[in-house]
Image 1: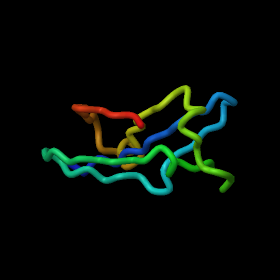
Image 2: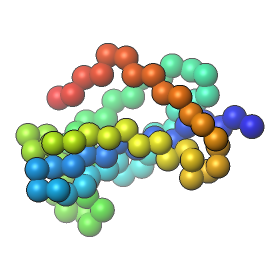
Image 3: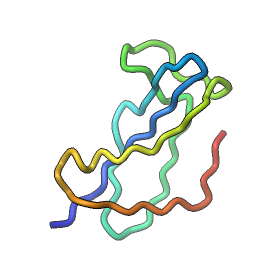
Length: 83
């Protein structure tokens, strides 16, 4: 069985706070899709102020698909731009 991938983008700031997307992004199986995630749209779980990109120290692409028992996934990144 093949499922669409579900990814999240997580940012950690210089104070160790974690920020993520309000909702993950679903990516179709076997298709290329452009994903744009403005860093200022990453928010903490407590609903506080969004991430200040100037304070970003770590950025993670998190595969949430495994939560749905999908098996192994492969992702290709091309033309990654951080702003």
